Image (tube, rainbow, N blue to C red):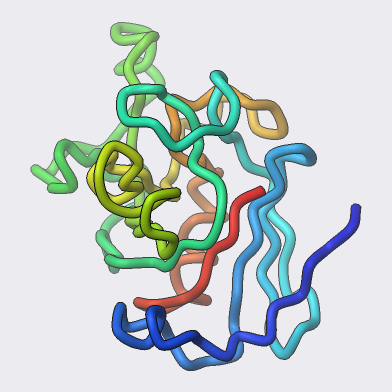
Length: 180
């Protein structure tokens, strides 16, 4: 895989949006269905993921994973139990079970942690009908019985629950996330 390494020196636009100044960045490869965490331009972690079944794209209601430069705009779910179920980014006390999935096999489960993404490129993945944040695009946990390594999501980047817990602790508000 040709990997673009980022200098992590934020532009004026990124500084205004609160991009994290640390030397951690993230690249999501939809082609390889992997998420890479870089620190000091070295690969720190690689996770198997699932991006959108409908492919890549920025349009609202497309159920596609948005491309380009993003940041983590919000971190939701710190210290919640593994398999905590989120509804509209809130935890109401329910914890996912396999039986729940059997009863609701088509539900798009958002579990354990949420990293809410915001686009950095006005007109491409920010503002208007292409706004990543307004599309509620997250990196989040998913039931362990759901496949990883193949595109099956409805636009978000899905991860295994154990992986999202570890990843959540490696990144900060403002961490750069590039999706290709």
